Length: 169
Image (cartoon, rainbow, N blue to C red; front, side, top):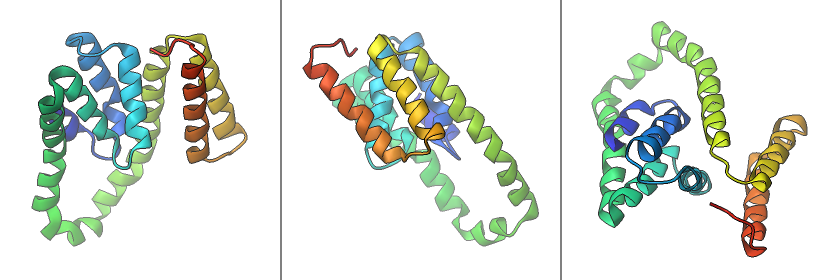
């Protein structure tokens, strides 16, 4: 699974969230839907790509060795592509066909992020979590506030909810 995630995540890791969730939660049962949502949240608050979520899935499947193996396998395709493509980068960058492809990929990325948001939203298990999501949906696009502040505030609410004894998973 990790190699597949790495191979399919070019242009944005959000594309592979539904794939990871389907395999880790549905097909293999390595994690619950709530645990997977937490893994995605960890991937968002740590430096680096969304693909790091696959390390948490690997850990859930096979402990530390599984997490390390999943990380290596997830990043291998991008490293191979960079190493193979580096000598041709300038030519690709000036190619009209490549630029047209990249221009068309923008709307696809928006759709992928929307699809991931729906998939993760459906995994919420408690009403207070839905309220935090609704507040974030208002805070970000309607009030045009920053992502970092929103993530910190939502994380803070999660910590307070856990300390207050609300169910979290």
